Length: 532
Image (tube, rainbow, N blue to C red; front, side):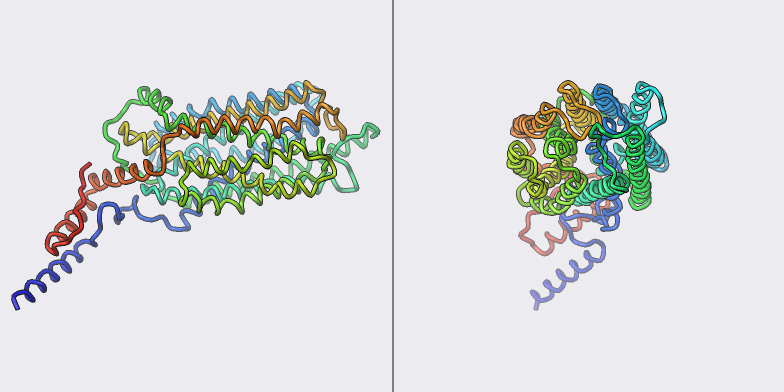
């Protein structure tokens, strides 16, 4: 009987403790606002906010070179300077904007005010970027596009940089951040597809009216040439206007559909920014990830930036817009697959496997001949797979690097990490596209003509095969020495959760109650600790 009474008292004690707090270990979560699971609608709203950057820049990547060369009728040298200097300027402004965001502190947060101010400016400048001004001088046109290209990239940075940093401020939980990142990457792929549908089909709708051609054979009259170019200009303007509307809707969705949290991430000992910068740049996980991503994205950008020209002048495929849509639709299909593989194989392995799938594509591009359009459609699916990997995996690795830095140095500096990461990537893509256009000018590219010299066709083939292949091999060298394996990532996750337990009073009480329960019920589980 005494035993029965003792058992009853133990059960009563446990029930009474459960009324005060649900039994949890420190690693099982907590009822705090920053640590709870994000709702699906919040993840969706966050993901939609990533569309403006990919939506606009993917269209720029595919169409800006052929637009400036054939529609705006700029010399290849001018186009090369616009693309290279625009990307260089864009890259330089990233760390500056990142530092300004770090010093921002308003009652609306430090990130969302920047996003709200930048979105409408970016939408307006994007339309003007695709407008052909009525200037008599090509030099005046050069400065027009240089100004609006640089201006658009600057205000887009003011939107996209705080948006990427928002990843770290929507939840403390690593799993929730990774899940939100998947929503973001899926939305960006949808944005890529939507942008190219809007721009590509708009161009086709205007250039195919009345049987018109969007390139010159050399036999047209001046009136016919002017009429063809005007139709093409209108197609670009209508497409850019529709894309700008999507930019505004996407920005409004993330601004009103998410919450920017003020999270204490266990930062122990404030490091001045001027001392933190050298530590960030020299941090091995950071510069190895940047190196790998930089060369992988350069390979993809070289293919993307020259894809339309390669299809049109090397393979003689006029409807290259449809091929671009197939590429981006395939990227959208492959995104969920790679999201699942991230959890099963780990991020570093996924990055290596995904890059390796690009080699069959490069081999086909190297040997493909005209009148084999069906082959391009088949292997465009593989091109979409490469885009899905590059867009998803590296960006999901950045929070891991930031967490690792936090554990090593006691401070996170999310916006600085993201700003330098984006800066190096933009600089690499600018160099890739700028050099490509300059090389085309050197080998005799003729603006707007249906037929190009054989040297141009051969150069375009090299730009979508040999150069990307070299970049991928260099990217593998950086990925090989990237130190954050899956085991390291899991250890970091455990350490950060224990830190949060140590600093969250509510969670400390939960841990204390859990310990008392274990003692009273003589549990065989090892008591958790709240101290590192």
